[in-house]
Length: 391
Image (cartoon, rainbow, N blue to C red; front, side, top):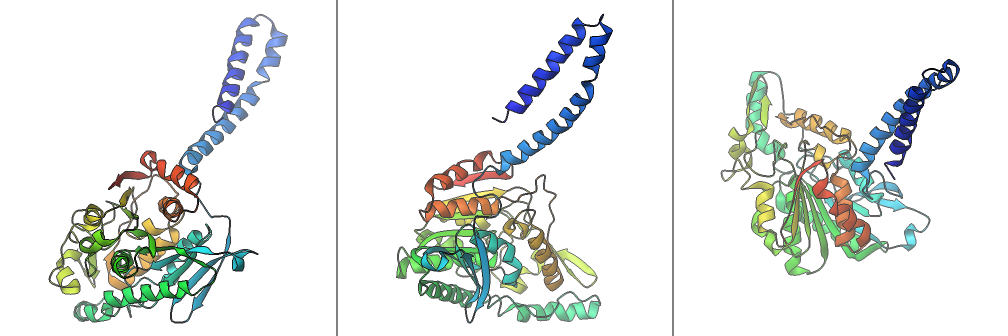
């Protein structure tokens, strides 16, 4: 169908060219044919627009590109966090699949709102932990003396936010809360997290696989930090649910594999953040985060790993062009001094959520046909570097 406009238009051009050559000795008819040239010009312009539109559509033909069919509502639940639900006339009578979301270190949950609302619009109830999103005052003073004081006080500022066991308990509390809701399908519970939260969801899933088998039906992790404890790569083999990991080699903080290369600015000084990693994260900190996402993938039973082209540690979790998550990256730079990369993408629509929604539809047995169709396109998607599966 996409070829039809091109075929008709080029047939028109070819026919006009032949006629021009045949009537070169007939001025009157030639003038009539010359009058068609403006039509050709307009046609070429429109054809270019069609071509561009088709190019965009070719990447965005996935069933889950853009917002879903449901309006959503957002509220705060005391002692739990941010709740986002699909809003329809039948919402209260329907049992929805649910996702517990764990944010990154010092990442305020509301700054993920575009991503969470987009996910919910595809028919999911979202419960997002908010208890460990505050890392305190700005950490990048401009005066060298203040910078030195800040450097030595930084571990204390992030200590509560980096309490891994506390976040794991909060995520489990979110799950327990969802199971009390009449509008949640208890047989369709998934975990999703970014960065530190992306590591924590593996720990929670591994724990629940032993204590409550079959409760968690899927795990989605965005740029997971393999530096949380217990280390995700060491416990992921216990997770029986299917796993989807998104990472990027252009992520300078938590790349798919290899050493992290992000720099840190404190006062007037900028240097490799890896120098201070043992001071901030403990003596066993490793510049590769113990193998990163690839180590988690390698030790998983049933996992898919998608390397997203040209995204940063934050924009990989974004929607559309990642504007909200880039704002979060800029805010995080002011809080931590970490200089997050800003890769120049050759495309606009970040594909992470498209494939996450497709994966959840398959893993939670919601719409297997559309989910599998979208996932089957991943290996040919130019926005992705590679797709690996462990089975």
